[in-house]
Length: 458
Image (cartoon, rainbow, N blue to C red):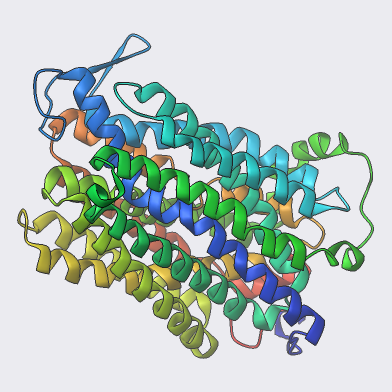
């Protein structure tokens, strides 16, 4: 009979709305690294450096058949970036779950948000130093920046639960993502000017890319000040928590074990592992695929991601409105069919056909915002109260730019076939398996199992 109870609508108070307005700005801040560096410029730039090292006698943008020597292992230069993302996430999977447990036991989560932010932003800005044949520095800085981003987003996502009632979470999560798309798109537009007119700034093409890395890191650090200042009253709203910091490590022993008491949460995480890996690999590898397989220039790639960002801004808000009528689970499920179509069409695209490429990018933007924002808000209801950061650490290990299984498959397929078309079409399996698993999640039951109140529409 418990499962049939009628939920009571819970909406945000004026104070919560004020905190939410500050919270949105973190997406705006962090999107600089996510979009400009991770999604657009880093993969082609580091791959060109790797090609130069492996095949020193040919242009860096030409296909290289030689392997790069990495710790005595031969790696195709074109697989370096996917492997870097994989290693980054393996490290994150170990570290971030510890971070989540510790943050849940802190009265001052903003201190952690600030610390992780400035570690990540510093590493992102330091990518300006990556040049010549020094691909190793790029690998190290990317791992640090991704780890800083992942840790910061654990705290950031957990804060949303503390300041947002259940009925408003789809909207608030979507609005946060929308801020991110708008912020990332704004900086990306400025980056396009820099890349096109780099001579006017006294820079060559590589120098313009490195300058963009520097600006993205500074942007992340500066705009993060807005949420860090605006959320200062958050500690006054927090419930009492244990002061034993090391207890957070001991708590981890029960994190995975406790999932057996929340079977719907576990099922959603498993579904999310697959379909999010597919989405994140498409996002992380789009610039690599467009640059090396379809032969688009850096400027054309920036235009592509710029289009994705601004369409995703409206897509996130539109999906949130539809979720209010049809439920977040149904909308995410529908988006996975569209993702599958996008991957199949990308595999069939001819080289240098910018028109079709931009049309495909518009399709990605339409579903990107909705599937990401609704996944976060849906999961927030499946988390037991008081363990937000701990459970979001599991979620975050698979989140933006930190997918590992998809990037590993993408890199391995290229290693075997030396053709990115095979790599991109291999991602279909992730959306298919994710859709099947998501369909089996009983969301309302899972929300009640976690001790939370379901929204009016699930």
